[in-house]
Amino acid sequence: KAGVTQTPRYLIKTRGQQVTLSCSPISGHRSVSWYQQTPGQGLQFLFEYFSETQRNKGNFPGRFSGRQFSNSRSEMNVSTLELGDSALYLCASSLGDRDTYEQYFGPGTRLTVT
Amino acid sequence: KNQVEQSPQSLIILEGKNCTLQCNYTVSPFSNLRWYKQDTGRGPVSLTIMTFSENTKSNGRYTATLDADTKQSSLHITASQLSDSASYICVVSPTFSGGYNKLIFGAGTRLAVHP
Image (cartoon, rainbow over all chains, first blue to last red; front, side, top):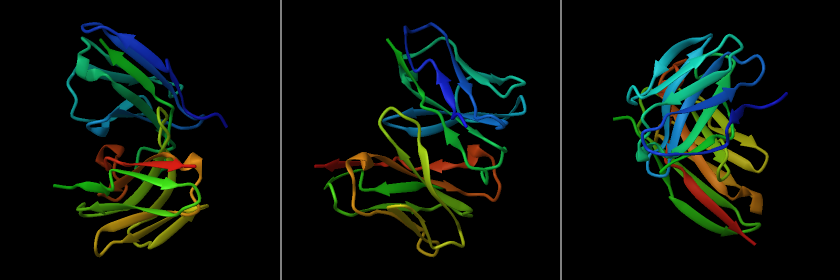
């Protein structure tokens, strides 16, 4: 079974631009969560989608948004990029929306904002 | 405030040696604790998951222990290999069947295995 895939793997943007990241979960998984990982803050929860509905949202500004499609694929969007948005963005999929289900992480998208 | 603290921050060991990584948490209530391995530039991969009632869980050369009374967990790596070089992240869930937004991540321990 194919794992979680994320595209693109690497991205360089300039301040003020916007970016869209994509995540394809494992087949059959309906939950997709997004995390931001930086050296200083570690892994921080962004949001979670289950069956096209946002279930939970972390403490991030409104510039961060996401959505999930009927095939469970998910996208996250960051508008008006800031230097501090440089990070590894990880997507994780699972069968259900409770933490009793195992999460499987993708390889991440490395975003650099200059 | 619920916290998860890992020690040491970084560790260097020689190939073939054993090592133990620590995770202390102040999370209450406590549901389960997971250990993840994350290679540089990659996503975390689950090693073990233990509920509050479990004391130990093994996955090959990785053995995790949990002491719910002292709120401590350790990850023991036996006969280390170069491929064990990675960050190891401890993650605690404070609720029973809660959402992923409730997970509390430790900062990780960066392990380097040298030949």
